Structures are given as structure tokens and as C-alpha cells.
Length: 323
Image (cartoon, rainbow, N blue to C red; front, side, top):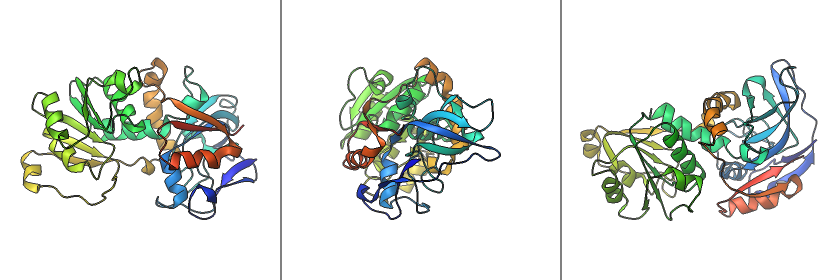
């Protein structure tokens, strides 16, 4: 089969299309013929050597959709989708014509989603669920502020928060999401990500601050995010843009009884990620969690070009169609 490979870290130019042996499904495993695989910013960072734990040589790619072609009889021919913090790092990933997976990593693709749409939901929705529902334990009626609300993760957080009964969702970003977009449909108030961020979030929440602040930017926004919390609020951090080391007033922190929570979907392998996707299946099926807009679907032999676009900061989703 054909697969995208890299045996050294660097720019997308280190990637090459190669012929490799077809995967074989042993006991407890399956082979998925990949129909779509999105390119995440973390895939680009992985190739660049900016992620931990990658074993070379490797095929990158975390998210996928495809058809099971070998494995347990009751799975063969079924459309599936998924993601994994191991895929593309310690095991070969989805940017290939076929993917070897544990049977426990298989999740039935929602019928209403195309393969490209399903292949664009894995990383963003899993880390959103992990931080918002499992770690911050969002309860119905609580308020949520999302910094980076227009990005992939922020959009997923907004939709999950709406689905799970948040009473008020405040979106924070450098610009308002386009009207009619999944993010715009889910947030109640938009505030700009500027020096007045904290005051704007507090004003939007009636002066109390947000019960949960999900900071998908981090680093440069950390202090403002922390100050935006309501009493006993929970701050979820998933990134450290521009500034990995931060400072804050410890007295304000403990007087407010705040909690700071880190969430990292890399800690969830494909099987653990499948459990989270299964929990969200009703929302995917109903449209409560919609797929992000797909910028372009490209063939595997144009993968390097697509990686370069993502590396350059393109906000749209690029999806490979290996087959």
C-alpha cells in the first residue's frame, strides 16, 4: 500500500510517499481501508519534532474514517471513524491507504456525516470532551467561556457545552465566528480577545465570571482566563501559545478557590479515544455536534502540499483521500 512516511524531523518537505507492506490483522486487531484522514496542526508539529514520544520512521495522521476490510466478521464492511494519541506517534497513523487498529478502537461512523466530515472530528471533539465533561465536569445550568472559540477545539467545546445544557456560552476570539457557523450557532455572547477580555467575560456573565473557562489558546491568554473564573470556577488549559511559562497571583487563586486543569488527548490511545467518540455519537447523529467546514479534500500524492498549507496557518480543514 501507499503511505506518507518520515524518518527525520523537519518541515513538511521531509515527508515522502512510499510503498510499504499491507497491514495484517492479528488476534484482536482489524485493518481499516482509509477513505479520509484530516491533517491536524498536531500532525504538522509531530513531523517537525515538536511533539513528545514519536518513534521513527513513522506514518503520521491521528484522525481517520474508513471501511473495515479485515478483522472480526461482524465488523467487516462497516464504516468507522476515530482518532488516537498513539496514531502517528508510536504506531503508524492514518495518512496511508490502510490502518491497523485494535478492534476496541473501532467506532461506527455517524450516517449523517461524510467520510471527510467524520475524519475531521476526532482530535478536536475528544480533547473538548476530555477537558469540558470529564475533567471540568460541566453541569447543566453552568456558564462557559471559551478562549479561541472560532478554532476547531473551541467550536467543539461550544457545541458540547450547548448539548450538555450550559446556560450561557461566551465565545472569545480575535474575530467573531462567521454567521451560521457551528461556533456562532452555539455561543450566546461574543467578546474580543483583547486587553479587556476579563472585564468583557465578567460583564457577559452578570459580573460573576464563568463557571468553566476553556482556554484553547493558553500561554498569552492564561492570566486573563484565570481572572475570568467565577468563585470555585474551573480553568481548562490545552495549549501554551507563545509563552509556555506563566505567572499569577497565588492569593487571588486560593481566595477564589479556583481550579486549573490540564487536558491532553495525546494520553488517550485509539481505543480510549473510541470510548469518548461513542459517548458523543448521539450528538454527531443529531447534528448537535457538526463537522467543521472542509477547506479541501486532496489525494495522498498531494499530501505534502496540504501539510504546507496547514503549517502556514490555514484555518480551514484539509483532508486526505488516500483511496
